[in-house]
Length: 289
Length: 322
Ligand SMILES: Cc1cc2nc3c(=O)[nH]c(=O)nc-3n(C[C@H](O)[C@H](O)[C@H](O)COP(=O)(O)OP(=O)(O)OC[C@H]3O[C@@H](n4cnc5c(N)ncnc54)[C@H](O)[C@@H]3O)c2cc1C
Ligand SMILES: Cc1cc2nc3c(=O)[nH]c(=O)nc-3n(C[C@H](O)[C@H](O)[C@H](O)COP(=O)(O)O)c2cc1C
Ligand code: FES
Image (cartoon, rainbow over all chains, first blue to last red; front, side, top):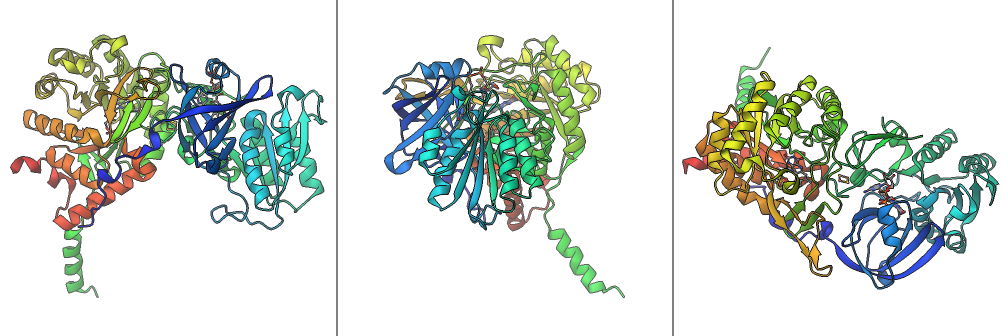
C-alpha cells in the first residue's frame, strides 16, 4: 500500500511556534522609524516576513530587513503608526519578544533558477516607498554580493521620512531620492525617477523590484511593463496566522501570506483587488486612495 | 468495427476504477473533502480558490449579524501536534458575508456551505435568514465555538435542549435549504446532543469543532494566545473527532461531516469508516499547504484502489461492522 504519509511525520513541526528573541540593539532611522536587532538564527530571504509577538501586548507581521543567520542576528525596520508599533518603540535592549517565521515568498534575482528572469545585463532597479526600503535593502545586499549593479530609488513625503540611506550606499548601490516636498533629491514621485532611468538606459535593466504603498507599486509595475522590464512587487494584506490558515489576508483569491507577499507584477496585475481595496481584521473592505 | 472484447475489457476496467465523487444530502461533490469553516474562506474568491485547489465542498468563515474584529493577536499558535486558535469569530457580518457567498456560488463550482453564529436562538434565525438570498447549498450553524465564552456564555452545543432550540429556530426560516449543526467535543457526552438536534429537524451534523485547550510560553511565562484559551485542531484532535463521529453515527440517522485532524487520505478513510459521509479539512492546510485537498483525495483514491473500494459511500460506517 502506498500510504506512507502519517501525521507522525508532521508532529514537532515548529513553523507556527514562537522562539524567544532578546533585543540586541535599537537604531533610530528617523523620528518615526527604528530598526530592532534580535538574537536569533533566522533563515530568511529578502521579501519574507515574520510574526513578531510582544508578550502581553499583541502580534504583528514585519518584513525582515536584516538577516545574518551565521551571526545569529536579524533586524526589523519598523514605522510607528499605531498602538502595537508604539508599544514596540517603548521596549529596551534586553527585552524578550517572540518571533515565528520566516513566512511567505521572497524576491528572486535575475538568473536564479526559479526566477524566470534572465541576468543579461546584471543591472536592476529597486523602488522603495516608506518602510518598503527595508526589505529592498536586504535584497540589495544579496544582489551586490552576486555582482549586480543596483539603482535604488527611494521615495517619501519629506526628507525626515527617508530610511537606511547610509546602509544602501555602503552596499555600493546608486541611490536616487524623490520627495514630495523636494526636501531631498527629485521633487516629485519615484515613478518620475524610474521613468528617467528606464528611458535613458533603455534595454539595459534585467528587472525592477518594488515595495511600498500599493498604488505606488502598481504604477511602478505598469511603467516597468511599458519598458519591457519584469517587475516583482510585495503585497501587504491584514495578517493573523501568516501560514495560510485563517484566510484573513485574501487578495482576490490569493492567500497573500503563502502565495505572496512577493509576486510578479505580471501575475498580480490581473488580480481584481490589487490596487483597488484591502480588508481589515474583520474582513471589511477599504479602498485605496 | 467495434471490438467486442476490448469493450468488455474497458467495462471491466471501469468497474475497477475508483470514483471519488460523493453525494451529500442530494448534492454531488467531486470528492468527500470539505473546506472547514474558519479556513481560507473569509471571502468568496478565497472559497473559489479552495475549490480550484480540490475541495469537494466549501464552508465560509462563520458570519454574525454585525461585523467582528475578533480577539487581539496572537490568535493562533502551533504546538507539537496541532494548532491552538482563538480567532474570536472575526467576520465582516452577514450583510457583507452574503455578497461573498454570492461570489462563491458563482465561482466555486462545488456546493457552498453558509455558516452563521449568534448569541441567542432568535439571532441565529436572523443570521440564517440573512444569508438565504445567496442561495447556499447548505446552512451550517456554529453552536460550538469554544473561544467566545466570555462574550456568549457556554456554547449551545453543550446542552441538548439549547442546541435543539437553535436548530428549530433556524429550520423555520431557511425553507428547503438543508441544515447542518456543528457539534462540540467539549461535552461529557456528544450522542444526546446529536439525538436532540436530529429530533429538532437537523438534516446533518458536522463533528467536530475544536477542543478547548491552552498553550503557555515558558519564557514569556504566560499563555500565548491573548484570549488565554483556544481550540485545539489538527492531528491532536483526530482521535477525539473519530470517537465523536463514531458515537454520533450510532446515535442518529442523518449524515455526518467528520471534521478534526484530517491531514492525509488515510485519516479521511478512518473518518468515513467511523461514520462520516464527507470529511472536513482545515488544519491540513498548515501542514500540507493549498495542495492539501488534492493530496488527501489522491491518497484516498490510492487506498480505495488497493483495498478494492469503488466509491466513498462504500466506506461509510464500515468500522461499526467489526
Ligand atoms: C507582510 C507584511 C510585512 C510588513 N512589514 C513591515 C515592516 O517591515 N515594517 C513596518 O513598520 N510595518 C510592516 N508591516 C505593517 C505592520 O504590520 C503594521 O504597520 C502594524 O501591524 C501596525 O500595527 P499598529 O497597532 O501599530 O497600528 P494600527 O493602527 O493597528 O494599524 C495601522 C495600519 O497597519 C495595518 N495593520 C494593522 N495590523 C495589521 C496586521 N495584522 N497585518 C497587516 N496590516 C496590519 C492596518 O491595516 C493599518 O493600515 C507589514 C505588514 C505585512 C502584512
Ligand atoms: C483558525 C481557525 C478558525 C476557525 N473558525 C471557525 C469558525 O468560524 N466556525 C466554525 O464552525 N469552526 C471554526 N473552526 C473549527 C474548524 O472548522 C474545525 O472544526 C476544526 O479546526 C477541526 O478541524 P481540523 O483539525 O481539520 O482543523 C476554526 C478552526 C481554526 C483552527
Ligand atoms: S494570514 Fe492567515 S491565511 Fe494568511
